[in-house]
Amino acid sequence: MKSVTIAICNYNYERFLADAIDSALAQDYPDTQVLVVDDGSTDKSREIIMSYGTRVRSVMKANGGQVSAYNRALDEIDTEYVILLDADDLLYPNAVTEVMQRFNSGDYAKVQFRLDVISQDGTGTGVTVPHSDAPSDCGTLLRRGWLYPSPPASGNAYKSSALRRFFPIPETTEGRYGADFFTIYGVALVGQVASIALSLGAYRVHKSAPTDVSFANSEKNNKAPKAYAARWGALRYVARNRLNIDLPQSFHDFSHEKAIFCSEVYGAPLIDRWRWFAFDSRNYLHSIVANPFWGVAKKVGTIGLSCLCLVPYAPLSNYVVRFISNPLARRSSAAH
Image 1 (cartoon, helix red, strand yellow):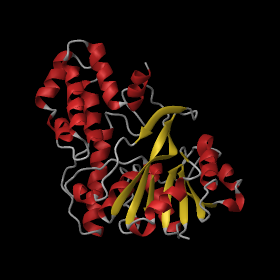
Image 2: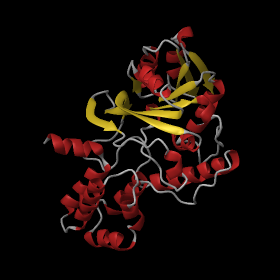
Image 3: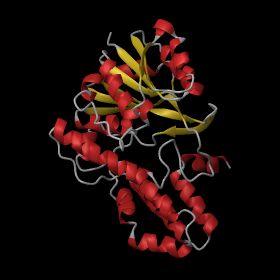
Image 4: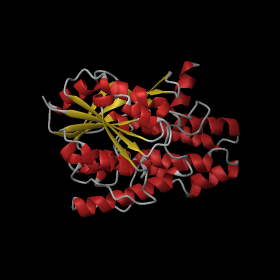
């Protein structure tokens, strides 16, 4: 039987950490190991980790950021496969079993699965991520700059040897976070990706609500574009120097362009909304029209909704932005 490590990278998540560890220990796949890397927590996280004794392997390191924690985790892992579970998320008991069945069905570098979105207190929202499955040969499209649909960090399982082809990631002051960007997209450059259309875990969203314009725990819409650009630049550096692959200067991703769209249009006066659409919406529209992962109906629907932001009625415009950017808003609308 092939061995799997669930590696939990934690920083000051004492409130959720025990649930994450318990979910890892509860896997029904027999050869599952649990590693917890604590990145210099200042709360009671380390006491929680130590309370598990020999049931988990632990690493206590100085704070260096998420990239540093991922680098250390991969140094410690000695199994063939790994799931990098965020310390505030959960895996369902059959997650590793389902993942390994898919790994055994083909030559994959990564198997991804869907996650149920839960609120901070663990309540289900009825939303799952991602909304689309990835094609197996994501690398071909990535070499053209297209970021493929993927769940957040906890919804991905990797072949350890594939990650080590481009890890460790350089640790810089500007690049402390977003480590899952490198695992998710870097791995597509070294092997094929498989998707499981089942929810095998839960992704905890801390601050988003149906009335919010942003969703998930990443940077706010006005900061996300800069962070994405920096990570793409770092991935290009790693791809060129470790894999001898030249990625394009720029990338294409609806989530990235959507963040820009939201920051420019949400709450803006009518004239500014029209001005943005007239002069600055090219990349946003390209990420819809040329999107290789979407069908025609989704493209037409998204463009139609986006154009509603141009009507001279701010409440409707703002609602449309929330509907496009926040899956919780869409779920709330459907419920009513």
